[in-house]
Image 1: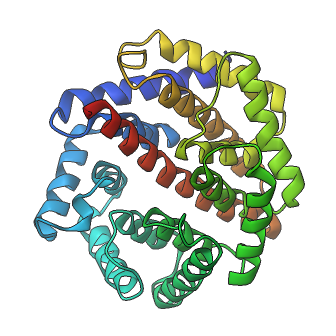
Image 2 (image 1 turned 90 degrees about the vertical axis):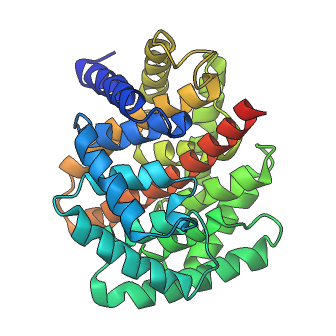
Length: 329
């Protein structure tokens, strides 16, 4: 493992431990996700800032607020990175209200509101919300039984890209039909296709890269989960330049994490561990991609990459929630 990746892994574990030590009563399956948010920025978690952000959200929302649903600690963690968290959360609440005019209440809407606040201008919030609803309706027309509350997040994130509604749906459907014969879960394939739609390459190429990564990981006894976590492979397909190097690095990170308490069989489990291994590797690729981008086309690509990263976060939240539910049964 190279030094940069090793440092990222060590920081990730350190951040997970900080979450574990300071937030014992929260859902522990969310700790690695929260840790990865700070790790992506190369920062060690600041427990006091996270506690402050948690209090800001609790003070400004009702007891049954969707902000206190499944992604609660992820939203808290994002808010803790802000220099002026109260001001930021006020903005997020305004965006959430705008989204609520278009969507039913969902635990995934708060995360969507957060991402809009990062990428969109204030006077564009309404347009993004309406475009999101248009995309969501088209998703539901294509897949009425698959499209659910988590897909409102994918619709919002897609609306932030430079794709128009019809282009987005057309690209999603191309990817969906290529991938559905490979993977069992139609819901997972739909979520994966949402992320791949953000990549500018043709559907066949990016789907083949995704399948190649999956198959080669399986050959290395590092089989990627085929549930909702499958979406993370889409992020890798967008960012990787060398598939074999990517596979080697994921295997190395997985081996490292498997030796750490809490990441083994009696911790988050193999499927989640491999998913986070892929996330850590993709973070390093995103960093390099952004560093070398200097033109307008590249800026558009970076914007889509950031959106894809947040879409992958939605998938991780859903995957962690499912794993948590399975562990409690």
